[in-house]
Amino acid sequence: MMGALKGDVRTINGSNDMQEDVFMDGLMMDFPLTLDLVLRRAEQHFHHKEIVTRMPGKGWHRYTYGEMAVRAKRLALALQSAGIKEGDCVATLCWNHYRHLEAYIGVPVIGAVLHTLNLRLHPDDLAYIASDARDRMVIVDESLLPLLNQFKDAVGFEKIIVVTEQGVAPDGMEDYEAFIAPFEAADYVQIPLRENMAAGICYTSGTTGKPKGVVYSHRSNVLHSIGAGLESGIGLSERDTLLPVVPMFHANSWGLPYAALMLGPKLVFPGPYLDGETLLDGFASERVTVSAGVPTVWNALLATLAVKKDDYDLRCLRKLIVGGSAVPVSMIQAFDEKYGIGVVQAWGMTELSPVGTVSNLTSALLEAPKADQYLYRAMQGTPMPLVEIRARGDAGLAAWDGETMGELEVRGPWISSAYLNRPDAADRFTEDGWFKTGDIVTIDPVGYIKIQDRSKDLVKSGGEWISSVDLENTIMGHEDVAEAAVIAVPHPKWDERPLAVVVRRAGSSLDEATLRCYLAERVAKWWIPDAIVFVEEIPKTSVGKFKKTALREQFSEYQFQQSN
Ligand code: ADP
Image 1 (cartoon, rainbow, N blue to C red):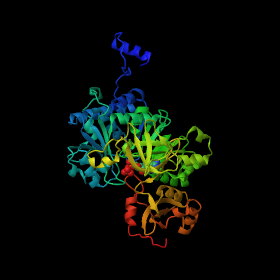
Image 2 (cartoon, rainbow, N blue to C red; image 1 turned 45 degrees about the horizontal axis):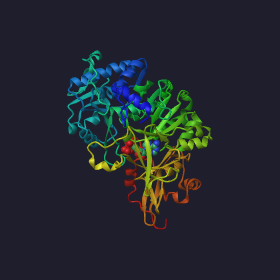
Image 3 (tube, rainbow, N blue to C red; image 1 turned 90 degrees about the vertical axis):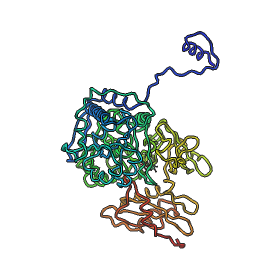
Image 4 (cartoon, rainbow, N blue to C red; image 1 turned 120 degrees about the vertical axis):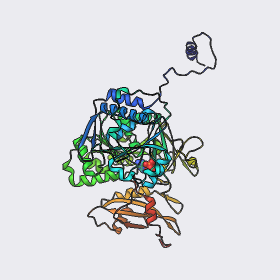
């Protein structure tokens, strides 16, 4: 041992005995990373900052972080008095709004577990999910009661709290305001929490199978929130005005509500209005600087801007965080060149709390030509600090050469180590403690990843892989294409060949021959789809991704001929 260490050990022991081979612990506090810390931070430092919500009638509700903290504590007391204890699950079935935020913090600070139900799922799936998580109570938006009524009896919630406009809940249910009314924030006493206890549950949206429960801990939520504040993460700060379009029922709204409480931006919730015009109105009137959502949302926004650009002052908007599915270069370029708005792509999964990588530009890329910057922005970026990556191909770990494909594996303090009640899904985790993402990637020498596909969506043509994502993005680069999805169709000679399903832009008469010529100039000949089918709409999942399972079903009769 080094002399200096021996000296320190002696001090710790309070004696002069010299000990050989004694290892030191640091002399730092054992300080649990729990969400009550985040609540205190919000109320102590950001009490004056605004939280604004677009209400069902389209008007705005305004209050402050300080008022939010008071009401979250009243909710916490109300839940305790209703018998909710440590480890009990409380579900929400709500849009993005201030009372949902109160539940986001008021539920976990009493040791209970917040389970955000995805309102776009089928009632049968919701019944399965809420029963699987053993939700005892549910907080539901009035407008979503017709949905709740279709599955509540199958779950048997003990209490249903309704977020109402007029303060009147249906028989057998309780109004949210009435529920918290009897309680005073001053009576709230923080119970001690353990950092590894469960704080929240989200189910995967089931794009590739039955939804699986992901259980977040206090620690994972706190660390993920810090990650969001880093420049090499999302770079959110107190100076921002954040409008999370991504729903609070989808992977914790990408962790943004907790990040906001930790970092203190002005918060703007869109309520149930996610259409281009209402969002743009909110961006302009509330002077939003950062927003986040899936590519389909920003596609709709671009369409609105194309005809109404001058109606909105978007000079404050500096960053759109886009993720959930691949972002075409054309979208990144359009936002930058036409409107001066930077698009930053993030890759993640429900299992990753959810952010894993962010396409921030390195110092070298900042010096590079714009075209190169766009190409890197269209990749999924480098891992957030504390997240580690590797890719595994048939021949073992894939080289970081930007070319070798393999399945991405990740590990880190905000990544799942198991699914709730699903020992059958243990094969998603490696023996040495990594999570297998199911995404096929290449990794470049500095760790920039590019998602080539979900392993189930790759087109395996004659022993070679065609990335459906790459092909889709190239097709969507055509100015007359609004959306495109590519699926594999069985082929007698090549095993599988690509079929492209394309939605034309409104007013365009794009035909197959023109699109083929366009592709011939941009992709390898053997990548050109064997069939291009024009449709009115591509089916989407509950969180706005192309629903490839539905497309595969729709085209299940499709057979390519030997001559192709
Ligand atoms: P589900 O697994 O049910 O689709 P998630 O929202 O957790 O629900 O989706 C995670 C998946 O979404 C990832 O495994 C990946 O395939 C895809 N994904 C997320 N972000 C991106 C991105 N930026 N580019 C490409 N694919 C992405």
